[in-house]
Length: 188
Image (cartoon, rainbow, N blue to C red; front, side, top):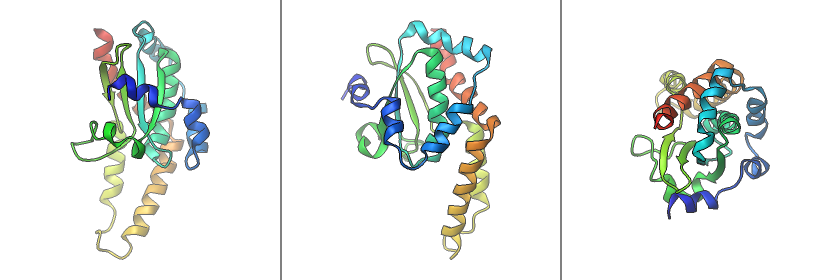
């Protein structure tokens, strides 16, 4: 399938939110609170003439998607990006073309396409700063053979979700990272 076909297969942001059952409230809370600066709005508004669209590989259970999707929605409102959401596990043929480090089905993945369906940029699944946070938290986990590993890992993920859903400085790293990824395509 071509990227245009994937785009047309996807749900709107509103349909995605309506279908959510896991991280809906936290995601909507981030959406309500995250703000773009005037300077960021000016930068992202440059995209309005490009008529780009974004395919979003996501899943409701994913903490990274809970963080990044509402931030992308705010950017999309300024840039006039049309978003279409595809659930990762229902779209593995596309997901497997965007593996993280060539092996992981990490999400979210944002695929920016032009009106002809040509890929212009790809972002995801995390800002470098968020990756650093999760790497540091994982480094404190016991060995996988440790009887407490699963319990400690679940606790770590709960702490991670709490941190990323409540800290605006983390949200800013996502804005900055998406902006950096789009700077070159916007210049063309």
